[in-house]
Image (cartoon, rainbow, N blue to C red; front, top):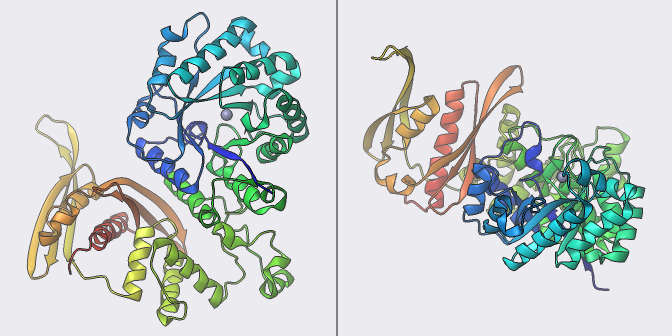
Length: 531
Ligand SMILES: [Zn+2]
C-alpha cells in the first residue's frame, strides 16, 4: 500500500522566536534554517519580512535550502486594496518560496480586534491569496483562533478557511492560537473541516497550553489533516508550540503512523535528531532538557536494579523505541561496549572511518569520558571532537606552537577625560623555525587575543585569512567541586562552512584560547595545509 505523505512545517524562526529569552541573530536564523533543511523539514518559516531588520536581511540573504522557505505576514488591511498595502507589499516582495498569511477566523475577533465586517475579512483573505498567487508564491493561510472560532460560529470559521482554499491556497492551517483546545475537540472539528476542504490541504498549528500540542497535532492527523506545524524543542510563546522533536520520531517509529504515512525525514537523518535538538539549545545558551522525550539525556537512562539487568539482557524489555534510532544513548552504568559504540557513532557523524576493533578507539573513549567530566561537551563541538579523534587515531600535524601570550586590560582616563577600558594582547608563535610576535588591540580580552593570534601565522596565514568568528558563548559549569568556564566558539570560512570548537578552564581566557586555537588548527586540517 502506498504511503500517504505528511508535510512538516517548522516555525521555530517565527513563532519560536516569541519564546521568552530567545533572541535570534541573523547568523542564528541562517544556521537553524540549514539545520532544519538537513533534517528534511518541508517548510521553514523564516519570520516577518519588513517587520524588523533581522528578518528583512534574512529574506534578502542567500540561503541555498531545499525546504520551501516561507515568509509570514498579515492579509491586506481592511479598507485597503491589496495593491495599496505597504505591509502586504513587503511580504510579497520578500525573497521567499511561499507566503503564509495569518487571518482572523473567529467572528468575535473580526469585530473586536479587527473592527471590520465579516464580509470584509473574507474579501481580505481572498484578495491576499490571489495577490500572492499572482506573484508566483505558494500560499498558506493560518486561520487564527480557528478552534475557538469554530466553537462560537462554525459557519463563519469554515467560510474563512474555504475562502482561502477556493482562491488557490495550497494549505489552510487550523490554529489553536490560545492552546486550550483538547484532543477530542480537535479531532471532531478537523473531521468536519475535511468534509469541505480535502485533508491533504489542511494543516494543524497547535500551542501547548494544556501540554497537549503534540497530542492535538496527532488528533488532527487522525481526522485527516496532512500538514503539521511545530517548532524545534517546542519553542514558542507561553508554553510553546507543538514540539517537532517529539512529533518526528513518533511519525517515524510508531506503527499507527509509520505504516500509513511518510515524511521528508529519512531514517539516516532521524539518527541526528538528538544532536539537532541539543545543538539548538547550545545556540540558545541554555541547558538541554534532560527529560525531553526521545532526545533527553535521561530519556533512555535506567538506574541500576532489576530494570538495568533486564535491559542488558534485552533492551526492548524497558524501552519503547531503540535510542540509537534518534541518535540518543542507552544509559545503564555504561558498559565498555556501549560506550565504544557511542564513540564509533560520533566518528561516523564527523566522517572519520574507524575499525571497531582498533585499540585506539578504547583510548579515545577514555579521553572523551575524562574530558566530559571536566566539562567538555563534544556533542556540540564537532570540530574539537574531530581534532581529538584525529590526534588519537592518527596524526594532526604540529602546525605551530604558541610559546607565550599576554593579555592586558587597562581602565583609565583618556585625553578627553573619559573613562575607557583598553585591551591589548601579545602572542608569540613558533612556526617551523620562525618565531613571530604579534600584538593587537581589541574591544575585549578574547577579541584582542583572537586578533593577535590570527595576525601572522607565517606560511599558514593564507589558509586562515578569511576565517571569522561568528559566535562566542560562555557558560559557567559546576564540574566537581569548582566552577569552570566552558567556551564555545563558532567559526566560518570563505566557503560558508561553519564549525564549533570548545575550551574548558577555570580561567575564561584560557578556555577561550583553547577554543580559538582548535578553530585555527581545524581550519588548517580542513584545508589540507601541509605540515
Ligand atoms: Zn502560533
